Image (tube, rainbow, N blue to C red):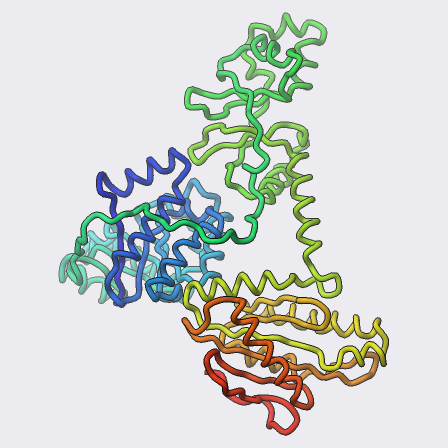
Length: 531
């Protein structure tokens, strides 16, 4: 059993509200505001289903912070929440939709594809989407049990979901006949008025989202960060109209021809156009003719697209016009400005340099901010986790005995092992905080694998045996308040681990004075101490 919670505006309908929000460029904000309001008005303790427009998958991950915070305030965990992604799917490229879904699953949400049979869900997205549920629209079920085509569609989808380890949901079940029909075909999950009629709690304050707390990490660069004003003319403009604009002293690098809805229809590059109209017979041939005859098809991209996605567009297009203006459009295709390829390349390069500067030069691992952000996220959503501090024992002696080059090699090897582990354990995050110290945060059921990989390995520095110490803090939901508190509690645990002979592993919990020594000389190896 689960509860699908919907928030509705005080006036009008949700589709009308979202349509207006899309026109104003606030679709993701309003869509998430509705989801937050639905969480607030839900009074059940059942697993929760929330609706989300497919277009919102393109929103930056930071825009989901308020929803995560609201779930944390109401005591809900993201793994108990299913986000139902609904149509329209067509306006969003499948690659961006899949990237958005992967981000949501990394935050812990489960996903469902809604409206199958009613909307415009592409089959390639259905095949690749990381979802748990597929919801079959009520319109498909109306023909059951007598319509052979309806039966065939349900049977085919059941075959697909069984092969892909997902589940099919029959929606809009209103009669016993329909319920018996879907049950007879093998559908095990159903939703509809027959099972539980909808209840109304009255209009919800859909857009009363909370103010953001302290600013988080800087968002990834998007195309809008490089936006310049566009010089536009009506798509019916003549070559003379364009020439007058481009001949001015402060002339733009190009002109965009737009229709009555401000959608780009053609693009003119300044240099190529002037060469054409000022050459021999150029004026006579082109002056009064439509400018479109000397124009190119405009390359367009949405303002919210990432800068790297922009560069992929240029690369994949097999396009040599890297000096041209690229037209930036809003969600409905209207021209909002232009960007230059060269400026985006420079901006991305500078950002990559800054990011690289934050990596440790020995291990290429990020600093403590990576673990700090993940700990803060887990605390916000009430998710249990383990924070660990790994340290090389007597590292100064290692350097003094084997030499600093051997010490550097040891740190690289340890960093490589942690990087490999984080690739195998998808919820694990690693930071190199300097010297021989590393921080790890992972799920509770992952820490035994982490400890085993680190402590079973025989570490050496130029033949000199080396031991390591691992201090772990198991944090239950709501047991810890901040990353700073995690850091404070780990410090004495690290000292305790280093006091244990040999490669050691100690474990404790917030609010407890008990420290379990799970590994070290005198212990019997790994114990099943983490549950």
